[in-house]
Image 1 (cartoon, one colour):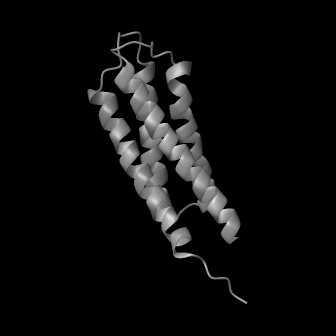
Image 2 (spheres, one colour):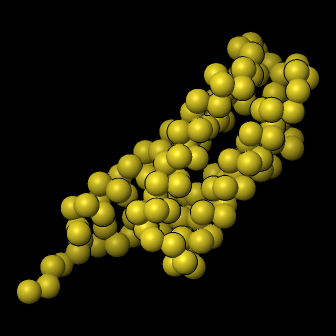
Length: 127
């Protein structure tokens, strides 16, 4: 007996891959052009560059099907969680000049972590 997989469950992996690539590219662009506040070091922009590159690479690898979906979702979730905690760990400084960088990291991280969690839950339901 074969199980029917809902159409939405089939589309979620492609959606997550696309969001990974787009948000990763946005982080890479923002890390070069964005304002991170006072020049207290290279941590904040480099943190976004590394997270953005990791998101793009994970998205491309997912599209090329070179990695298990659960592993890729775990990586996407890890990148998302890093983006959520990085403003606090790297101490962006909380002021008007860093608000855009903090908001970008929090929104991108929340989106990545949420989509990865939804995909992992969906993979358990259809498995």
